[in-house]
Image (tube, rainbow, N blue to C red; front, side, top):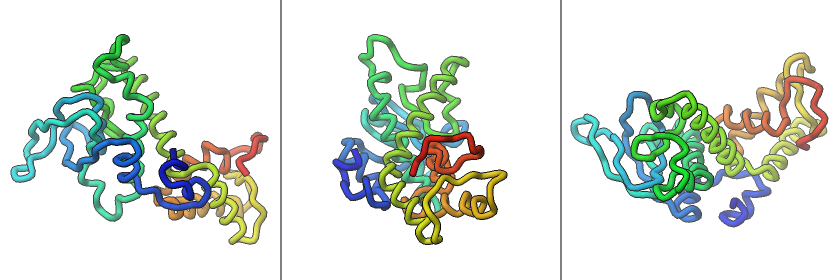
Length: 232
């Protein structure tokens, strides 16, 4: 997908234009509104036509707003400059839902919906539990949220480009690229375990936490020396 959209970003570290990706590559429509639910909801994906609760632009009171299938709704709180890394991730998180989950939520799915959700929408991040009505549904939603997080991370930080950034980081510090062992490792490893995620976050325009999780998933940063497979 990244190669089809912007080939150089597959191997060279850079910031992917998340909104352009979901609109021009995935064919989705991105809209920004103050999403109103009991808990903070940062993003939603419309798998079918329906309504969501948004704040009235004048009164600030909740009101229903119609949205069409294939719309990604992003909360306006993410448009602040300081929130841009989280905005990119949320947009790609929602786009990932469309890529891997839309068939399960299609109104014509003969097997029914994956879970029971208001208007067949999916809330991202905080607030997603509001859409569940049983423990099984909560497990289902947690599973697909993790799947969307993983795919969003892979699109924003493709493995080949991340490997390039990883090697550049070590080259800058005059070190040979290697796995970083955190907790019980050397002092320099402890420092690298903090500095590498910051470097990666800056290179790819994501949050430090998102960068750290991606590096941990690829075992570039680990807490034990038992790992044998290598990301390098």
